[in-house]
Length: 466
Image (cartoon, rainbow, N blue to C red; front, side, top):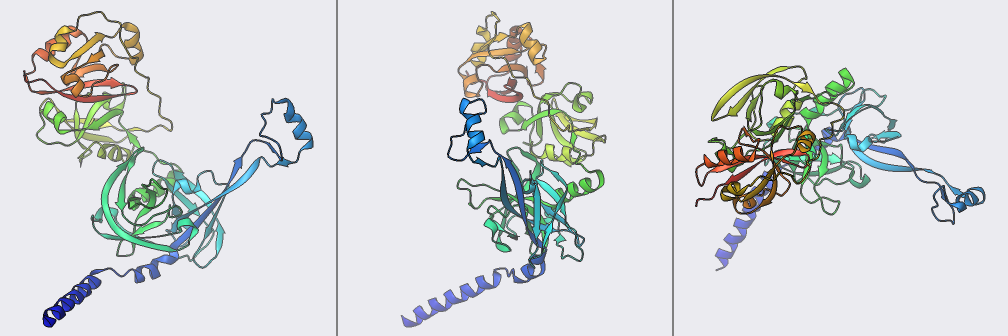
């Protein structure tokens, strides 16, 4: 019994030794690269309403405002607010990368090195869409980071962050790559690197290193319900950041391509409805009139499979690929249309500084046509658009959904939706709509192109078997 117990202890110690050997040692990496990581502090001027000591916050048209203005001690209207972030030196002559949100609206930016030297920094440029900013301090002979290749990162690989969380300079945290190519809400131009590295307020703008000591990303965002670290951290790939840097230094601004389409993800149901054997690509749910895609002959219901030779695996891929394409470039686009591949040539446009606001969809209709035949197939009550509604939507036809039940309700159609097409067949009237539905076999999935609020989307609906 004693021998057995001794063997168990020895086996446990042996296992611990093996695990200890496999854990990475970050000490050399930190010693070599830590000096190139800086603290970025900013000062903003907040313009507050005029306040009077010992008095309520009065509007300027209040009769008592003039009395307190003349006789009560005044609190300054402008107040300073300070914030902290991180950054890292990319050249020995003082160029520094950080996040755009770290220096946004800053009146003064101070960079502090690990040797406690402080420099006033100026902003060379920034890009809010990627959250990248380029700073410059007047110094030479500075330590700089080595840049890596984010594309070569593998999920599960060890990575390390250095920054100033909550103002604690040169804090080191480590973890692994949890995922690559993540898209976040309102952030469709950046294929984020997701990690479980502990990132907190103040880490923003700091570097993410691989085990070779190369920067592969800029720590930018965390997912948190508490405001602190919860195991979901996101970094901007360094190649995306350096492309922004290159454009800022050469052109003073960042340009991005656009083709003028609205897209959505291809689901299994939608792929079946369009006769696709593979669930991939970006489904076109809307085409801007007169835009690059419209001029090239791209239509709603087309699925973009390749753009300029690059595979479009999902709808999230397309905005990034198009945005990275130089405006004015002529590219080849591979589409899926009516059961086969089709190649078209397209001239890429440029994203304007301000996007135009889409018109809202008018809800309800004024048609009086009988929709009973539509009800038998989809459980829909619809009416035709009147001339005013067509003009507001800039369409030549369409049907307003007045009520849903059966297959239509299960397909998540909503009252007020405007049906523009079935697959790639534009719908102009109730009679045409019913004729199209009659030709669809029972149990099949169809895709309805629907205008909802400010955009268009394909909604898959499976016809009843009976």
